[in-house]
Amino acid sequence: MANGAPPSTRRSFLAGAAGALAASALATGCRKHRDAITLGLYAALTGSMADFGTASRNGVTLAAEEINAVGGLLGKPVYIAIEDTRGDSAEAASAVTRLIHIEGAVGILGEVASSLSLAGGRICQRYRVPMVSPSSTNPAVTALGDCVFRVCFIDPFQGEVMARFARHTLNFSRVAIFKEQGSAYAVGLADAFRTAFTRLGGTIPTEQAYRSGDTHFSAQLGTILAQNPEGIFCPGYYTEAALIAREARGQGFRGRFMGGDGWSSPSLVQNDDNQLVGDFYSVGFAPDGATTEVARSFARNFEAKFHYAPNDLAALAYDATLAMAQAITRAGVAVPERIRAELARTRNLDGATGLISLNEHRDAVKSAVILEVHENSADYRTTVNP
Image (cartoon, rainbow, N blue to C red; front, side, top):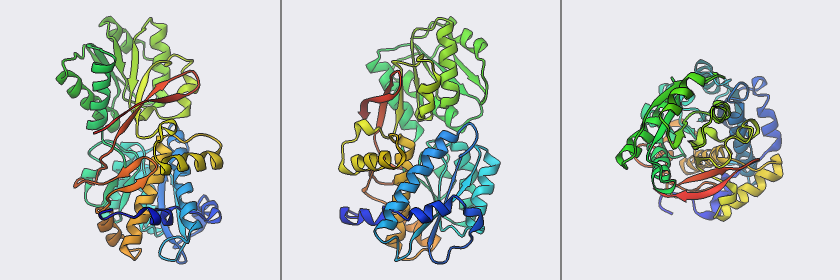
């Protein structure tokens, strides 16, 4: 594979040390781990986005344990230092600063929410430490500079995927947009959907907004439903999506909801009172849609360890760790600038979410998966290629 790891060496990036990982949860007591290669993970482990952070931590944990089980990197174990962002941008910046200057991390993994990756990415760019975001899809994240990478698709593609699905598969001509105000992710995805859907001949009759943490949406939904849309594209997070669906159904909406990967959480189907059944959202991975041995192995091993099926955020965090590990191996030294240069050369990395190659913008070029919501799960519907 050009500039990539051969299949036989992929497992050398699969990481272990249950002890090292257990210690990483207590990272505040450990500093500058000279006998290990330290990577830093910043993620929302508490607060409204805790489902995102937990999935990311578990994906990174599995990758790190598998890597260490076959000898680590450059003859040393991988140590994962973990910082909780609490879903706050200022805390994300502080978390990355601590990971770099206190923990001595030579590479950073995170975040999920684009606004948090923008905050943390600025710190990585300032101090020239490479960062791989597993799942921040706003184009502005990697536009921060040459130290910031991602292993997920970006919003222009995700928005195009859902617009095509709405227009050509669902045969919708009128779709309203209901987005989270002030969210880089939601605003960017809404823009991408609007551009693609109108280009395909569809109409956006109204576009409304809410704020993170809102629990009542009657005024905005009243405006939306007055326009009689066939569908509502809701490019926010799972926390509000379930509440919006419940309230909209109560007001008589019988059309389809659609969303992006911000819906990717078990909490979505736990909190929607089955009001999203039959609706759709896009992600980067689905265990029931896994087609490669790497993907199937990841899904099996993840479920065996954590006792639930992985979502796309866990799979992408796993892949982000593999990408960082592969770059360190190719660099031959745990020096941030050398790792950064090798990350930029990532080609055909065989990950849980498929083959990963990074383009000149440090973005992954890859497929999207559309899930359909059922009573207790969200299940594979189809794959859409770039």
